[in-house]
Length: 229
Image 1 (cartoon, rainbow, N blue to C red):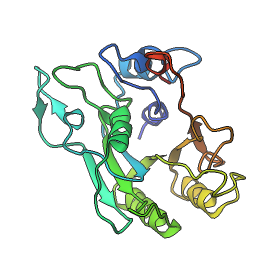
Image 2: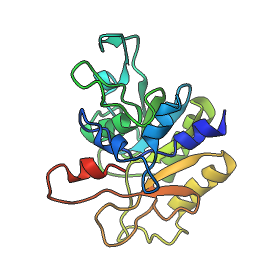
Image 3: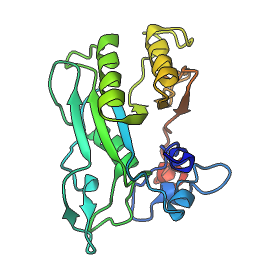
């Protein structure tokens, strides 16, 4: 796979949240992900598989995950797929649908410009936290094995964090070292949450071999949309 295509997929956090595509519009430049600029080069993640490790699953039949005809109507089959490694089954939820849409949305009739950073990719959403909010390194390992060995994912986003009160974010926990192992041995690019508005970085944001991103907690209307990435 060309290095330019892989470089494109590092642009994960551009947010396509309105018809103005604020996140993509603001992504161009030295301080942005340049996702829109890469789109203009014709690179949109076609043929790339992206994995997400999540607490729940996404709505795989959401219009955002279907190809579109000339009129913006859905065609073909969904490009989003759900997996469960928690033992408690598929559980669809909005947060993980948002994550999938940021990555792979293909727009709609009413929102044709609401596209993701990689609107040509397939996204695999792997649940690794059960109904009791329990998590296991075995579940994560099983998910990473399936995503990398069977689904061909070389870009993986971890959609949750372990707060410092649970696990010290010192880069040495079994959780972080497990992800670092897959980054090194499987040539996986990880995109990780830093802990959002917390005062301290959180696991998995302490990985050595990952791209760490953060959210914004602000009250100004549309501020997050405009900042995007």
